[in-house]
Image 1: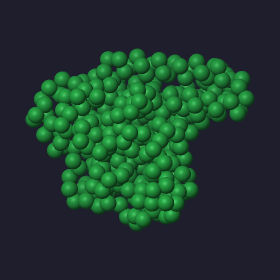
Image 2 (image 1 turned 30 degrees about the vertical axis):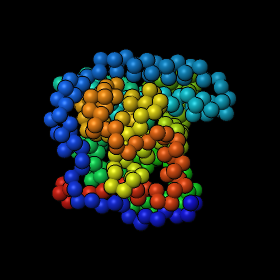
Image 3 (image 1 turned 135 degrees about the vertical axis):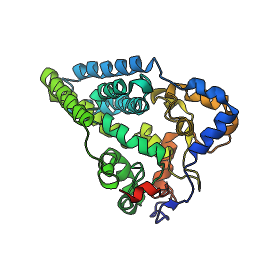
Length: 322
């Protein structure tokens, strides 16, 4: 404990990602799960309430001292913003308005992005498709750290720094691993976000904007909710690449902890993922799972066998064409 991590490379496998075959097996035995697919009519109202709550908070924090501003950004505002990133995750799967109305989902994602302060929604959608289709794919899945990250951040102190800087790495890694051209919707996302930020500053000054952006950066870095970044796919047990968490933080994170269920059925809204486990318990109850995101972070930092290299990787033919 406390030394440099023992791994010096990722766990390379030569098998397909497991969720496609699991989906077929589960649906063959439990076809009723198909009834859970489709849009969640409540999602748009929940997200709208969260966005309006943050706008109200911008008004309330306009005269706070910087010390209390950062405190509330970390303790409250950042939690809402992190939850909004997970709403955007759900929206990226078209569960706000359904697959037949993809553009409304994209525009609503831009709306949900507003309190986060940094344009994120459209780019996330573009890369998240690859994460599901090519889980752990070399040069394709930008959720996997780079070799440079894994080599540099290998001691407890440096792993803490790496966790703190997660928002930066999630923003820059796609540009290195799998760069894609900027699309029109990304430019729209940028322009709408800049206009919203400018409007907040015009109304109430700089502090509310700092509250929003600082909350996003802090709570997507070293924060209990951010334990899901590590819990989802880091290899705590050899050969296991996806884990679920069934604890209380799911109530404020759109059930992102039900991650095995989500990868098995990405078209099912987060609000219905617990029903997947209830309908097909024999496919989930005996799988390894996490019971605390805080414990996930603690073990990741202080266990010598865990670090950024603790990911399963595989190659896909498509990666050679990039």
